[in-house]
Image (tube, rainbow, N blue to C red; front, side, top):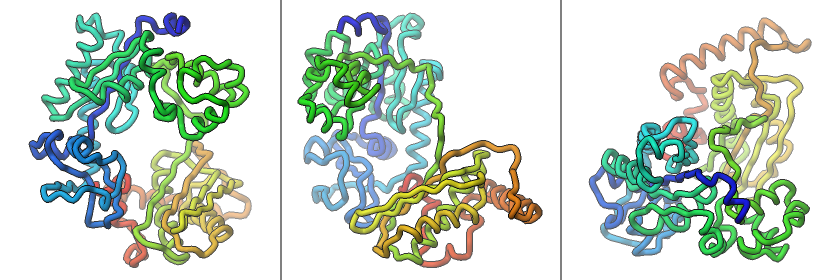
Length: 421
């Protein structure tokens, strides 16, 4: 704790979360109150097993509806409102919220964590607005409510971790939905949180390993010899020890840039698929991912395929390429080679492909075994097709196989994140 007091002593961070975001967007658009309206964001026309994206606090508090459930698990209410997901609308509202944040802080002091949650560095702006961290958060909270009709919850702390812990364990729960933790709250609030896996940054896997070491809570984690944690977790052990003591050395202005990047696409199928149907869907997914690859001016040298069967078993494999490529046919052949090598004939419910080892390119090195003229023709063809898709939309240019019953591409292009756009 003494070390924590010397770190970021004058700093103030806030984590701002939009309460029941998707459901709140739907209530706001209808002029309804989230605390008295039984509204669910889900598409019940799919099936009773459809995942519920969001519910109002009314359903959570009165009927105990969890954050994640399926339509079949919802209480049977005559006045239940089912709101069809509108992902494009939610993204638009999220962008407006971020725009409000940027009216108060600069881009370098803002980290958008998810569609409904962001970190803000408040310290540099308190003298400008002549207010406290709580006062600045109330101003932001009021702007969001007045302009968008959404309720923002705000956790404040001397670093990003304590602000997040404050949000999740206090600010979200009680009106006026603003709370502040200091280093003095580490012992009486942070250490009291159970189970240990409910803390942001401690997964079930890490939690089970800590349990085997005899560590049941954050107090035990804070007091254990850090060398034991280092032996078990490596450098992460030091981070866990710091976290349990309320220490977070993260600088929000130091943006993380990954050394290696990848892109991926996946989908859960609405019924069991066989070999032939899965091949068709893999071809469509490959076309979409190749379009994204070229649009980002990348080529790939690593292809990954993951197939999940109906019984939840799976296989996941990768294959490296000798030459970087962005060609649909070349990459699809690698995908099918992996699929043929490991597919066991069982019904399929989920498909996922990825391209890794991405590298930007300004020229292509032709293989001695390839025809340079054919490669140039194919490159020009892809450029023309990509231009048509960017201009007229993803469904403007499709393979003839998109008309087959196993095809999912037309419907998927009208979705965002697997939900209706």
